[in-house]
Picture 1 (cartoon, helix red, strand yellow):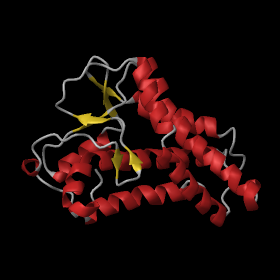
Picture 2: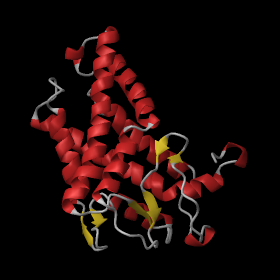
Picture 3: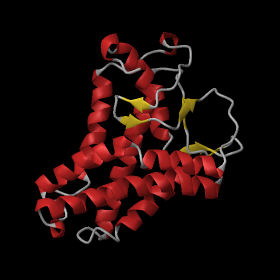
Length: 230
């Protein structure tokens, strides 16, 4: 089993969970913006979500790098890295890493590198260079289906610092750059097919992340109050 499959399974599991929770809600059920949670489902970071209707000043390059750094060093990243590294050891992904403590340490370091580098390129470096906004602008309005399409489409459509819609070169180019960099520390998977597969899985993970950001307020309202994080 390749090293990217655990991430792929996680992204599709997130989508399945949202669908089973009944996320297609109408806009009338949640008309008012809420104070933004900085964590979704107690695990996933949410440092860069805002309301689509909000009139906000453009982010400075320093602010963009700050968002990227916050995501790259958040405790959730280390928890996810620990879990995925354990799966990699069980499945013997990247066999050259070996087994035992040393093998796990290599998988932990490379998995964390995947997360951290992708966060820095897509949220900090590329948005700063290309003058694009790395934030996710939650739509809130419309049917569940239209909001789902909107969330996934944000992989390819973003805002410039001036507020214009543009192709999301920061997301697509940043993800591709992080995959290219990962060839330096993945000796078992440097073929073109391996890179294409990792790139597709990375975009799938980011799509699932956007869906979580879009529907978290709806899902949160459906959870029992005693277990809703505050």
